[in-house]
Amino acid sequence: ASSSDDTVLSLRSGFLKLTEVDSDVHFANHQDLWTPPGARGVFGGQTIAQAVHAAMRSVGPGYIVHSFHGYFLLAGDAGRNILFHVDRIRDGRSFATRRVEAKQKNKVIFSATMQFHVPEPSYGLEVADPMPPVPSWEGLKSDFQIMKEMLEDPTSAVPDGMRQLFLKRINGPQRIERRQIPKEAADVLEPVTWYWTRSPLKLDDDPSTHKVCLAYLSDMGMITAAYGPFGGWEQNRPNMVVSLDHSMWFHSDNFRADEWLLFETRCHRASGARILSLCKVWSSSSKELVFSCTQEGLARHSETKPLVRVVPDSKL
Figure 1 (cartoon, one colour):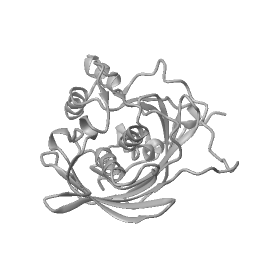
Figure 2 (tube, rainbow, N blue to C red):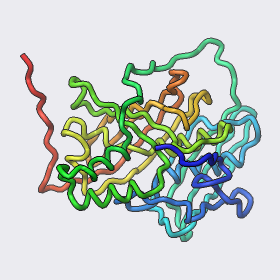
Figure 3 (tube, rainbow, N blue to C red):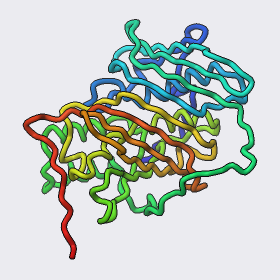
């Protein structure tokens, strides 16, 4: 899906917008907040992105965000505004540190610490994971296309509950376009997913807009990679799933969030009802690793329906 008009999204408009109400205090209007179908509260990626935006407003020119560490504490209520309080922890010549608390009803629902850096040369010290050789986004179907086709296919046995979720997703705001890359046979049971992802909305040319938008995109699908060895997420949906914490590292400004980005998400550990995943993001134009993030999430399953690993077919 792509934008149906020529509207250009910036940090001053739309669902990324914040309004300053006092020194280092901003609010997100509840009319712009989104709760994904089936979720317990406001989309975590939106809260992450708005926390980054709030912190960006407190630093001087030349400082760019390079790291972020946040904790989800309470579910956000999409019927109420969210207040973002910025605490200026430190301002140095090379680095600035900020703490941001997102509040509703005077309770902290999300807390994060961010650091900003004045760019400096590496003088040759450059190391990066190469972009994996995966199929292009061309010819792949988006999540929305797949859901729409499943709903329109009379032979598709979509359960009523799932059908309602699909309808809400299709009719809701389309702020993310994702195209999943099919796995090779050898990788089908690996705890990893690959997606081409971008904003379907045209963004302005401010690098800060693209970083905030990438922060928004980064909270999609971090948990689902763990379900590869069990036959996939759709067959093993947990009774409850929430994000616990989220960390991000911005490696480069050399990307646009409204152009295709390759997301590789791999689960490194799942135990004790918690899932830890690492995501790496490459720009389709520069082939450069521009972003990394980690997330730990809670996934609760029923004792009466435990997960069972899929045994791969033996090919002799």
